[in-house]
Amino acid sequence: MSENLQTTIDWYDQSGDEVTDPFDTDAGSPYALEEYAQGNDLTEQSESVFAAARAADEQGGQFDVATVFLALSLFSAASRRCSRAWSPRR
Image (cartoon, rainbow, N blue to C red; front, top):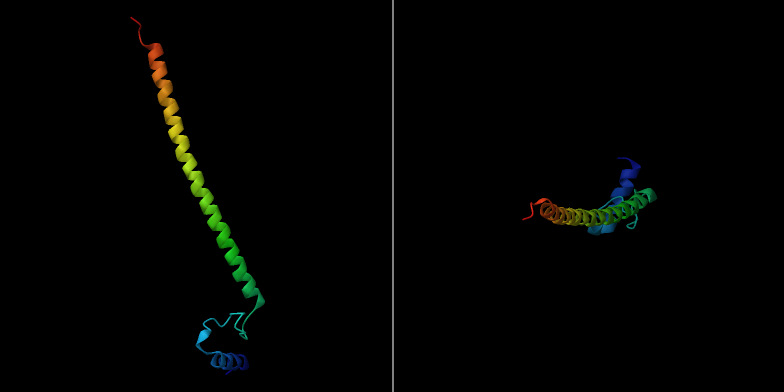
């Protein structure tokens, strides 16, 4: 068995069942890397930015629907007005 593996097994035996991730920097793991914690922070930031972008996209979709309804109502009003203008007068 390698020395690194033996160190990790000893650390896990001492830490108990509370540790589930051997790369957890807060638990004092011998495999913990600062870059791994930084990657987790960046992942959380990207997820929050993605959620904000999704919310903005949904709001934009609602504006698209409103634009279609506005265009239909304007088209309907214009076609009624044109039909009155072109109808034969008595």
